[in-house]
Length: 179
Image (cartoon, rainbow, N blue to C red; front, side, top):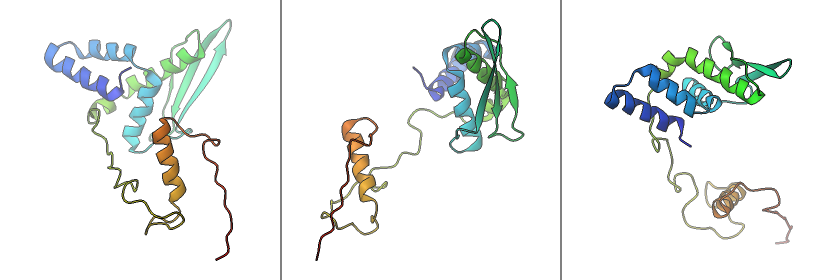
């Protein structure tokens, strides 16, 4: 599956090199991509922050026999605009329709945003993130790393296991010693 930034880059290439009409390229992108994910990424770029659970709210109504229509409210944007999507036979499709309608209504705003290519993010080196360097003796935190040992251990275990950790993966036990 392609990321939105890769799709946007591909769309720009199509527009520049193949001279296809903009509407054709946008329609193809809308059909290939996940509307909810694209809307989430659009809101993150517009607000320049991570989007929380209450920032984009989907409300679905059911109509007999089995038709769904979803309204999406973009509470993270100024004015908290709301958009009603086309009806669909499933709730999931109705949510996607609402997200695509919202994206279409904000197409001018989306076009004004800078196109980012994969790998253009703000990744830090491991040493800059406090994950590199010389190990310290057990129980003796390095300067500036007090309280970070559990976090560093969990981060290292997550990288080794290549999956998110569960509570059962690490068990911490404290023992009080004299001396």
